[in-house]
Length: 306
Ligand code: RIB
Image (tube, rainbow, N blue to C red; front, side, top):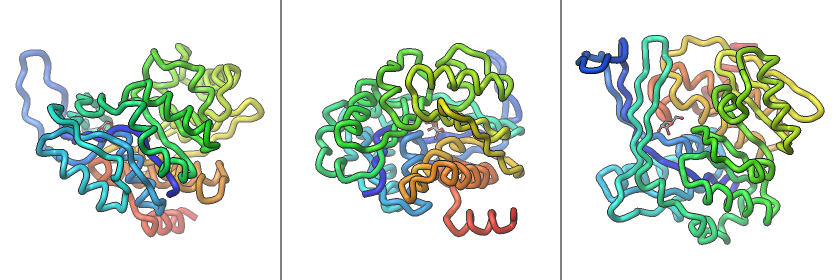
């Protein structure tokens, strides 16, 4: 197995809106789409679509969404041996609002994701030990995230930690034990309490994390590209200018694709460049997982760019 994603799954309920209603107001919105999402599942699907063998440790509810979520993961070849149902819980659900500028606002109701426990990580020990990379986000309980980081450290498996959604409760002792810390600018702002308006400010905030002991900070900055900051150096990879129609799940697309290429040859800069292209293509289509490109799409896109 190449990659283990230990994290969330959600059902995305995406409303395409002209504007948000005010309190007490009813507004008509032009369109709606339902799809499979959740930061963990999105990252797993992105990695699988680009060619990795992926397993997912996650929990679904005992409602009508559960079976569809499992079948969806399996349709991408993702190993669901450690994906289980929680009786009495709803599946995770995410009402999402996408405005005409392709920007999104997301609510999450975690449901069964809240029941993913540290023991669920240990239950998968044998299969997990054979993985080359562990990928984590913050839509599951923090103790489970911490156990997964420890597991990676105990078995010499590199860990990617995507601190999304940002939680001020995140314990930096564990963050420092991850190999790649990948926030977006707003998560970086919340976690460091520092401004992130300019590239200089982003670099300074990331450097504070380096000083605290985080080896690799990779900040995804949307249209402004991606900044990779270590104690020794900082490098920015520019974004691809595309006609964006829905940015939902673009950060997850980046992480899943980055994970794939990092496992493939360990070249971090190359992995960032490929993931930047993959994420750019994802914003040109509606939906989250449904917008992720194939390996062929990425190849074609990069050929045209050259
Ligand atoms: O990052 C996008 C994802 O955030 C959506 O798929 C939604 O489910 C929430 O988890």
